[in-house]
Length: 330
Image 1 (cartoon, helix red, strand yellow):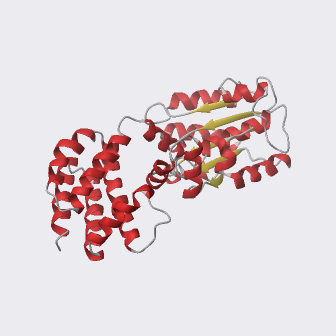
Image 2 (cartoon, rainbow, N blue to C red; image 1 turned 60 degrees about the horizontal axis):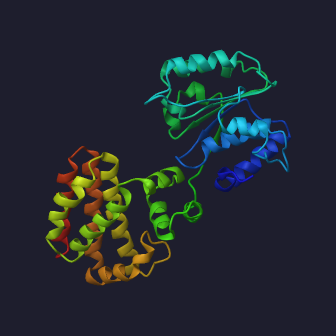
Image 3 (tube, rainbow, N blue to C red; image 1 turned 135 degrees about the vertical axis):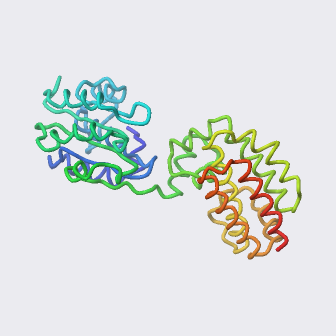
């Protein structure tokens, strides 16, 4: 069996292997941490481990009838709930409460997984308290969240909290390469997000590759002090980056390019976002002083703040372009 979670969080897998073998599994957990760190996968792994018919060395086989039903979402004693839209609705929690009062449909144990629990409404969150105060025997509730601070303290206090740390970048790069993504692209994606899921989605999108090309063209004009960079904003980047999340990626790419140039200036080339572009990065590094480059980085960081303050993307990038062209001569 080859589950992603066994690579993403091997220490937590060993922890829960031991806990389950000793029959010390708690009835309520909160899995908290950044997106893409395996919270939902670990919750599913626990369900697999509890129901698998052919556990070997503390690991579910993933192929037996019970495992296959869980993985396909068709096991009556493993219930998963995820937000509908921007929140977990009271009707979803009402359904969950009804299920929590029932004994196992086919076994004497049940597992309930609530994804993005921070999106529960207050009514929905309060609806869980009775179960958390008086949990049914052999019923396990696992909540996942990327924003623990948005959960009610009364919910948090009744759960065992498991913190998920960000994946080390080399590990994420290896995961991306194993998914068939080219090493250079994997390196870039690993600098832009810690989420394996998000990285795969971006790579498969219709905007990620052309966005890299257009930002690279714009950046080259900037470093060569070419006013065509200003035209690029209007004709290349703005039409491509109409959605807010893509606009944010433009500024992220700009910052990563500047950071790479600075890293090359200091001879630190082991962890570049654009490892296949060392030659061009070296050329740019020779064309600009460190104070000028630091000034450009400050302007790029300021542009991110402007965008977050709802200044229009085109205006933000045009102002950044003007500043960078001017600062190149400072």
